[in-house]
Length: 116
Length: 113
View: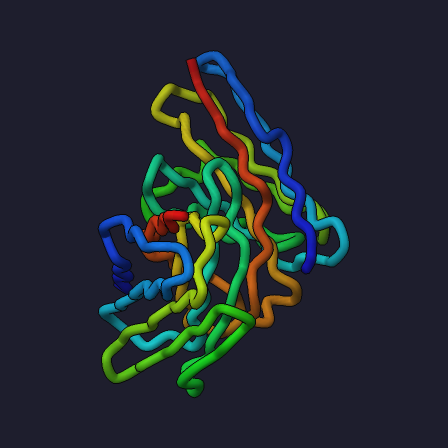
């Protein structure tokens, strides 16, 4: 299967700082990437859909100014958590689809963010 | 909005038995229903996809059924092994231009040796 690499896998930052998470599709071109957030023992909550070369589409209740998404190329999408607070601590996961063909999604390994 | 419910309790079974996990949805019938496996601290890994016009799909020891009348999918693991212990997620997609997936709550499966 296709490989999606997410970096970093773990990050600890101080309140008020910003953190950038990268999601790369290594062996295919991802026209669409998705960002999820997952709380302990909970399911994945879709935050936003990222399309290459256009603005991301955010789900209801997700602050777009708080969670900045950039999809500058067909192999890279980034999520920046701005002015992070402890309540932003969570497990963030990206996924990528190939040409949005409604087939399986390929997920990154996730990023554990801890804001102290 | 679509609600997806899976076995809320953890499922404990003995090695060699068949594990059956349930996924129920409440609203529209999805174009696609998928099952993923997630290990602690890792991203989900795709297992099987079934389309709305399909009743059953198999892959090695895995079997998925899809009943659009009952609005339910069943996921079976036959001859279960301790290595099958993980959280299993079902996910629904309406189809269309994007592959937007809505995930269920997940079921934690523990296979005892």
